[in-house]
Image 1 (tube, rainbow, N blue to C red):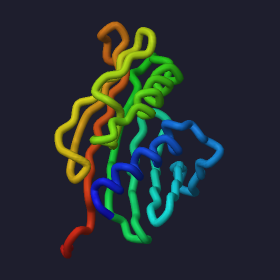
Image 2: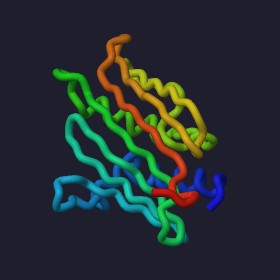
Image 3: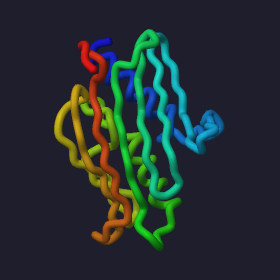
Length: 156
């Protein structure tokens, strides 16, 4: 799988997964986590997370049955803040995932009084970043993420 194919797959995967809100396709696991599976041709993703609040998880992309890419993430909504509006803007931001850096949302996105900001370094090969949601400049949500290619050469 090359970088271009991975980016196209991540865009499709994201729209069909959490951002798309198709919760009927989500699988509740025995360990209490939730999995959002997606398959397109020879590619498949396995987005598995715990939460509620706070939440954490990982997305693994496999090509022809072999894991090739991973992203791990952890985030929270501030105490006393209603989660529904926060996750509504988060899903809106994730639906606007940049095609050249398809691991979270755009640099900035606003819905009403809420603003989503996303800063990252790197490319789909190897990256890390932080997304924040503010209301009137008050931080109400924050998540960190990182990832990239896996198992490209021997080790361990």
